Image (cartoon, rainbow, N blue to C red; front, top):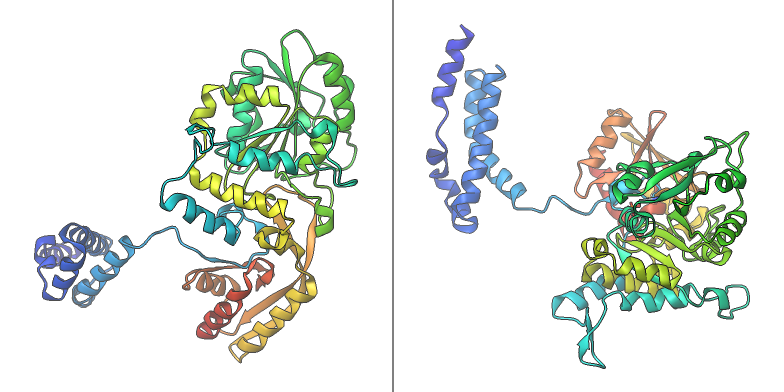
Length: 477
Ligand SMILES: *Cc1c(COP(=O)(O)O)cnc(C)c1O
């Protein structure tokens, strides 16, 4: 019986050609061309066909579906011609949220991207000499000054004045390039407590294998001593590697050698020491309330030969991976053909250069991630109060409560920043439903759900977006 009904419904379904000739769609065909329209019609009809097959449509449902076809095609066409990568509001309080694009860029970085890429540029051109230049010169000079300055005395420090930096696609690429350059065909010694996986399938043992180096594990998960490294050194050893644990901590009965001791060992045996810092802060984060996150400069000053870190984590710039360290080692990386394969484009250099200039000028407030870290709980609370006042109604209860923001991006996993949260409960919606409504609003708002409430942390919300949140919430209520 059902089969008969279905086959009748299928017969009622018009063909794609018939549909795109429907009068109301003519202007769309004119505006966007026949192929986009045909594709949209195919998607919409396919959806109806699917609904018939699954028995979701009876005769009435079919009529409604057919009546709705022109509108559905228009919507489908609009969706297919709109970028799917779009801005949203991050109200999670996680400052470096990998799923949400990590660091938002400084305005100066955005301006510079436009400036440097709209016309031609001197990306690899030495204007003085009129000859070919190096693209990494643009950022190397800035890293040189940022990583040479002794923050205590203000004097350039002798040991760190000769630091070179190159940038590649991301930190995973930086680690790959370094391992391949320094240790291909040889061994790299790593503590078992540091064989980490960072989200998105970056695993130290896997990257090591791809680099052509052999992993030599030492110590145990919770305890590794400097003597473990020392005993493991043999004539195939090319590198000692230290990895920031990033997204987890080991507590209890633990031991990790002091970086100083690893540096001494490396110097004594003439083997380079590399540290994968992951996040790579360029300023001392203690002034931003973040404890226990070593900076790139700390690491270089201690005597590490090469440090690798991301551009879009604590640095607050574009996606990139930096290798900073002893010039002769960095020069070897630059001449590796992998460097050519992993190199970054002018957009990245433009964004990175402007972000670094902000550091040189100590204009930390212009870098969104640093500005967000420096916001006080009181400032965030005042903004949350203002939003709460605008939206509170019978349908939506809004309270401002204490909470914690997270740095994210694998930095300082146990360091949180005290904040104020806007806690929402809706009369007619569960917390999950309310959070889905926020997510599907325009612009999309991403929040946390905890203990039956939707929690919004305005630390990661740009101040101009507070009113957008308030108006979306009013329309939901
Ligand atoms: C984040 C991280 C990486 C990966 O960096 P990407 O820039 O995402 O490629 C590698 N190592 C550590 C320790 C990290 O924290």
